Image (cartoon, rainbow, N blue to C red; front, side):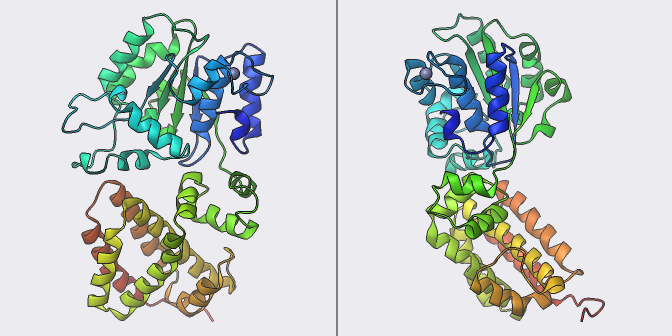
Length: 383
Ligand SMILES: [Zn+2]
C-alpha cells in the first residue's frame, strides 16, 4: 500500500514521513481511529515506507521487492497479530493459524472492522466469541523477536485491534513496547483506544486518524460514481465508515431494500399487524448480520430525521423523494417522548447483533417494543 493510495489524511501522512526524514521513528506507534477509517491502510503504508529500498521523501516506490512483499502481507519481517477465536480444530489459537483467512478478509477491504473479521468465521464461531489476543500470542512474539531480522531494515510487528489483548497478553508485552529489540517497530491499530490499559497507552505514541470527509469518499470511489449529495448521505448513514459504504455500494439492491424494509416495519408496528410483523421478522432474519446492522443504523438515522423534520419541516439529510414523502406522513408519530427510547433500543440491538443474538427473537421483541413506543402520546402539542 502506497500513501497516495490512502485517500485524505494528508496531515498524518506528513507526520509519518517527517518522522522518518528526521530520524525520529517511534518504536511503538498507535494508530487510533473509528471503525472504517484509514488507520490500518495508513499503518501498512507506513510499514512499506519504512522498508522501501527506493523511497522518495513522501512515499514508497511500490515496486522494489520489499514493497511488493509488504503489499502482499507476505514479508518475513512483517509479523501480523490479530484477535482470534477458538474453533473446533484450533483450541489454543494464535494469529499464525488464521493469517491466510485474515489476508483474504483485509485485501478485499482495508477498511474492514473487527465485527467484520469475527463474522468471517461464520459457523466456526458457535459460542459468540468476540475475538481475543491470547497470551500464547505474546509468547510467540517474544520468540520471533529473539531471532534476527530476515532481510528488512525495520522488523514490523503490526497488532490489529490491540484492545482485544487480555490482561496476561498486555502484561507480557509491556516491556517490549517500552524497549523493543533494535530495528523493531510496533504498529498498533485500534478502533477503541479507551479499552487499552493506561500502562500500555503511556508507552505508545498515539496518532489520531480523522474520519473520512465527504470529499475523501467521493475521491475513493472515483469521482463519477457518487454525487456530492449521495456521498454526504452515505457518510451520515455509516458514520464515515468506508468499509460499510463499500458494502452498501456493492449491494445496490440491498440499499433499495433499506427504505422499504423500514417503512414496512413502521407501518406494520403502527397497525399492530402481528402476522405482518412476523413475516417481516422472518425476512430480515434471513439477511446476514452485516445487513441487519446496516438496517438498524439506517433506522436510527430515520428516527432522528423524523424528529428534526418535526421541528424544522425540512430534512438535514437531503433525503430522497421516497424518504421525504415518508417523513412528511410519519414524523408526527416520533417526538421527544418516544424518540430517545426508540434510538436507545435500536443501539442496544446493534450491540446484541454483534454479540450473535438470535435475530428472530431480537427483531420480534424489538417490533413489540416499537408498537408500544409508537403509541406513546406526546405531552404537549407542537403546533
Ligand atoms: Zn519500494
